[in-house]
Length: 287
Image (tube, rainbow, N blue to C red; front, top):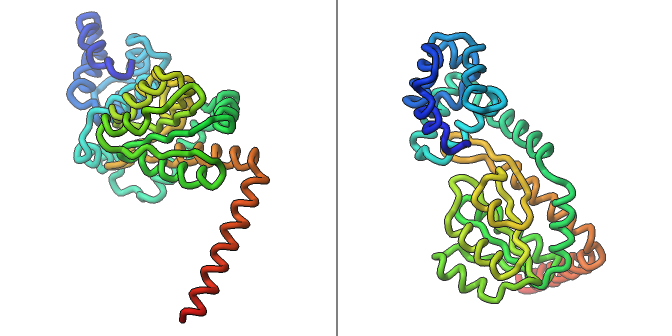
C-alpha cells in the first residue's frame, strides 16, 4: 500500500467529503511535506480538524494515521532525489538542534527494530551461517559499508566468507556461479533498493542457497526473494538514510557467531596478536 497511496487517493477522490478533498489535494501536491506532518499539523495546514485527518486515513484502508504516514514516508524515501530530501528535512528542522534530532530519530529506529526483529528467525540464520559451506555477502551503494563491516569480522571467525564485489550484475553473478544449497547468501538492501542486489539474491535463491535479507520492511524487494528476513528499520536523515539499526543487527549477528565459535575465535585473535608483536619487534630492530 505504501507505493500506491497517490493512485488510491485519485481513485477514491469522487467519494470524499469537502474536508477529505482538501487533505487529498494537499497530499497529491505536497506528499513530501505531508509525509512528515502529524495529524494535527496536517489538519491545520489544510483547514480541517485532526479527527477528520484520522478518519481520512481509515477511509483509505489504513489502521490509523500513523500507518498512512508510514506509507507516505516509504514512498517519499523511494521517490525523492537527494536535493529534495535535504529540502524536506530543512523545512522540518527549522531552528531545532540537528544533533538532538538525529540522535532521537536513531533511538526511535533502534526501538522499532527491537520490536520488529523476529528472534527465532535470527537464531535460524545464525545456525545456517555456522553450517554453511560458504557465506556470500552482498551490499551495493550505501549498503556496501554494512557488507564490508560484516565481511571483515566474519572472516576472523569463519572460513569461506566471501564479499561479492559490487560491480555490474553480470560480474556479480560470475562471483556467485558456484552458489548452491550448502551456501548462505546475505543480501543487505535499503532504500533506494539496488536492483543488482535483488537480482543477485534471486539468482542464489533459484540455485537453492539459503538467502538472508537484511532490509527495512517485509514488502521490500529483497525480502520477497529471501528465505529468511531480518528486519532493521532505517530512517531518512537529510540526504542519507540512517543505518544505525541495520548496523546494530549486523553487530548482533557477529556477536552470536562469535559466541558459537568461541574457541576458534580465541585462537585466531591469539595468533593475530602474536603476529603483531613479532611485526612490532621487527620494526624496532629495523629502526
